[in-house]
Image (cartoon, rainbow, N blue to C red; front, side, top):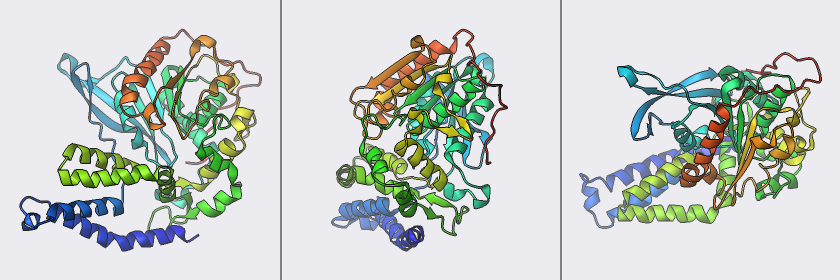
Length: 437
């Protein structure tokens, strides 16, 4: 139980050496420094820069989206908080135009809620997703809060609470004209939230776009899935859950620490990361500024991780990866059975990467088997050739192959005829509220 504390001690002990490496890197590379004229200065600067990058702390990056280019014109973008919850902020990216000589919000385009994963990285991992979607849509995104920054007094956060948050965000934006895009982990709670809303007779989004998610991890299980099934739940709680140290607002809160998740990320492809850092060192020696900048941008994001609430993490391991309650039709959320077959009038697009080593082929597509109330004409599946997990929502393949089809799918359902509400077998229940926060 002292692992987190030891990690903090190690981080504090390393801090002076990290700052020293940063100072050396600048001193031996600055054009006005006499040290840069010494023999071997380039190698000393490169080695210190690499040491600094490996040892430094990585804070949450900013979205840094201040403008978007559409058809050759540039439009300003303002990031706003639409709803602030203890464990998540609902962000809105508002685009503006100066048509008719006055600044006003761009209107008349589909509204999209992007549900970012709560699985170790910050929601800024979807920066490219947001920037691209802004070309043709009004965009909201879930910005999950690092659990170590949430005071213990705010209470626990479970998978049920996650589902309740999604329901509240959908109602806040307005479901009738909304399209929901879930990336990776949130495909499960998003499907649950919309299923529960449909079963109660509430308005549901016009469409669901589900990308690389673990709807049914029994399909093409990956190494991630196998780890979750090879160990009992008590093993995860005993070995991976730790209290937050006293130097954070969430002191005493039980979490799955981000640094442990990061170690798991690195262990999946150690050779790739070693080669990447060696190449970075070589590029520093060559003075290849473009390549070194690209390396920094990638690892600034990749190395910035957050802590997950223990209750939510353990719930996810149990419900999604061990017991497969959603595809088996046995998942109850706050006393209500999750029934995807209740969804009607909401179109469904599932997207998978051919080479995805996190969510295997068939895991996301399984949503079609569950959503039997969705008309066949309102369903579509896309397998992206040559794409891994991240390639379906970020990078060239996302922008050039995936996004055009997502845009077309949303546009085709943005002006759909009035939809039939889900049939009710029981009297309508009042809208369920988040249990905490």
